[in-house]
Amino acid sequence: MEQFGILSFGSRLKRLSDFLYGEVQAVYLASDTPISSTYFPILRLLSFEGALGVVEISEKLGISHPAVSKQVNKMVRDALLVKKMDPLDQRKTLLALSDSASQSMVRAKPVLEAIDLELTRLIESFSLSSTFLASFTKVEQEVLSLGLAKQVVTQCKFQNKLELKPLSEVRVDSFRELNMSWLNQYFSGQITEEDRCVLETPIESIVEKGGEVWAAVVPEESASNEEDDNKESGYKVVGVFALRPSKLGLQAKSGANEMELIKMAVTETEQGKGLGHYLLLHALRRTRALGSDKLVLETANKLVAAMKLYQGFGFVEKNVDHFSVERADVFMELEINTGASCE
Image (cartoon, rainbow, N blue to C red; front, side, top):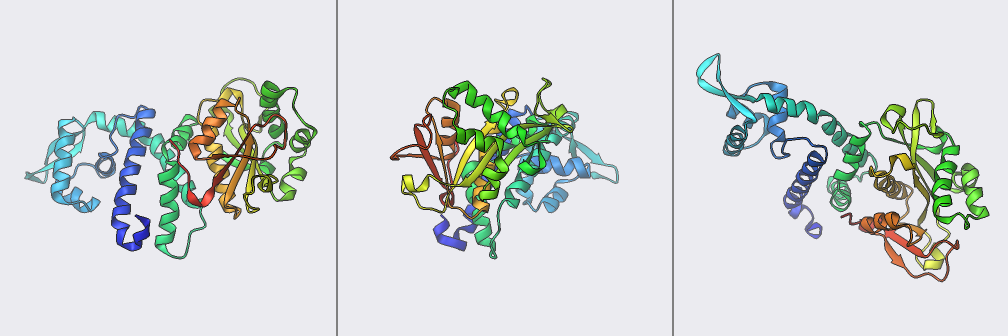
């Protein structure tokens, strides 16, 4: 559809709107929020404005009168809206939220805050183009390919307090500790001197050589209650990853303008909350921000959860002559400019 340019813009807006409605509904279901995404504009309006007539709702939302009438009739049948007489004009009927709808909107508040937060981060992750259509295309491609629901649900699980910080703003030791945990668990006899060097001196080994190290952090009360050495100054490091200019590109004959993802880890107490997806999405965005068009990595088939995560993002396995470490048996790459597919 994109090939038709501005001629298909209306259809693209409709496609994106339908997709986002579906993503938001998935968030509501996952967070046990009993409202429909299709009802949300009217629910939101009435929660702020109070009781309104159909004509007023139509004018304020910019939706046709017949469309609003059809929608509010459904909402009355679903006991979300109640009809009231206008105290100033007994001939006029107003629509207001039912008690159950008002309670649902209160419950939905943190979910809506998470959606707003993640959409803002999505927009801010781009260096938007000078033309509106080019900027819209960038955002559209990421939303359609990677979705919104998973990162919103993850954010909700941490009460909207999950943040991503560069290593310079957190305790440096957390990068080593989180990675040594999974390395000792799966590859206790295959930890190399280079592993130790990178983990013990990440600033010198990664950052000063053109790479980046990031940490996902939450306030202590938003994380699991178990005592953990990664807690410091009121927050807990729950995940880390690093990017560096790739040393693997020539092996894969895939060009030089690429970044390598290394040392991604999630603390054991917070696994199962979508943090791997959250970190990998940020790694993709940072790769794009650094001007690279490809993200590559080495992994192992025995890391089943990691393999599933990478495949879900659209990483493709490639044949290579050899691996940089003995424990690796899979080389994967993702073309940043072509998007990804997350199931």
